[in-house]
Length: 72
Image 1 (spheres, rainbow, N blue to C red):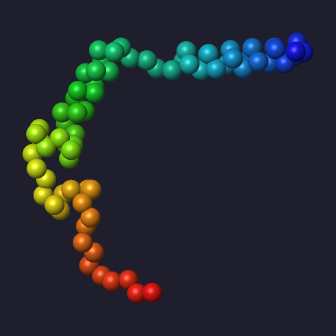
Image 2 (image 1 turned 180 degrees about the vertical axis):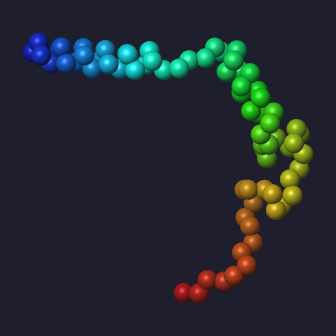
Image 3 (image 1 turned 135 degrees about the horizontal axis):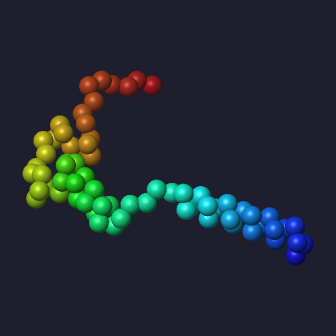
């Protein structure tokens, strides 16, 4: 393998490592706390034990009746 190609691969690898290093990171405990907070404040229609049953009009997965016809 030519030396120039190896050098270019190393430079690209270095660049990717620098990009990863510059990413903002948070601790696992902080991420867990944020996840718990999100789950407790965001209503989930599939967890009826916690949030209760939904009205059919509120259910985003229920087919909504259409008020008009389509003619072709």
